[in-house]
Length: 135
Image (cartoon, rainbow, N blue to C red; front, side, top):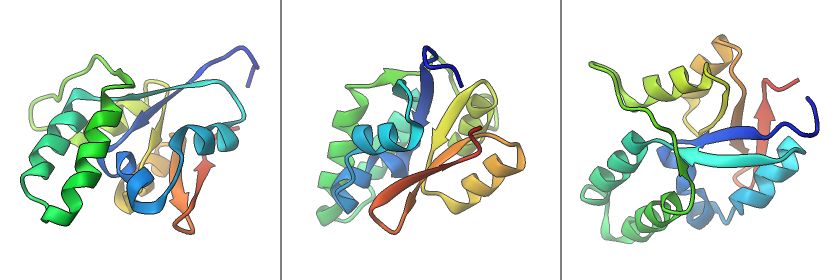
């Protein structure tokens, strides 16, 4: 990895809620595990998923979703839309194949990313982030 290269990290729905749920400072923790400059992004489909989720969660969880939505306003959006029949996880898998590191706490998505050798950032010990698949 060259020092001048900026890594791109795409955040999924559940990952965006980590700061309030677990007290994780995403920017500092991602910087700690990547040891490189990076940009954070998400997809319009993740934002839509958060908006739908807001209407479905218990009242105590609304603040987590609102925080995640506010965070999406301060990060880049990947210019990509869901393809026909595609779920958000499928989109993130596809985007990961285009050079993004995918940040998720979804065990099934992590397994699919690993199978395709796509780097993934995940939560470890309910407090710290870890990365796998980067050389």
